[in-house]
Length: 111
Length: 110
Image (cartoon, rainbow over all chains, first blue to last red; front, side, top):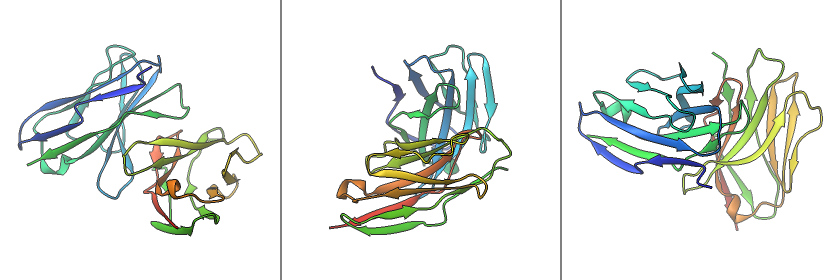
């Protein structure tokens, strides 16, 4: 039982490049989330989804896009990467608004 | 915006002693869940304990317990018999609005 799987674990991007952070869960959870965690800070919600085909903005959505075509997958797209997006990104899933299962995170550096 | 506030950026406790981490929150909902998560240096987010708002009884999980004061919107975490492995960042969360507090870094002294 893999839980929540995030890929890649580390990535370095140049300013202006684009990339997609992948997230997959095998627990048949309806809710999925993307957070970013800046050094020494808490988690800030970027986007979330309550089911396939339904997504909504969180606290810090600017510069990001998401899609949810299946229950299992919830990719996060960065277009035109900026240094301010250097962070650790966490994907999570939950059954309804229960406790969240987290992936191991993706450390992203933009230089 | 609804918020979760952890007023203690850092706390320290002697091994085997008890420590309490504070959390306050703001919500307009009447039915919600509150959680404490632990984040060790490995960066994993691990659920410590959860509390359903409709339950008056405080949740307990082994050495971890909460003091839930619904009227005051307070949700503190008590760690008894602290162990070296308890050293980590601790985050409080209100899952109704999917927000986390800024965290408390707990140091355990041998």
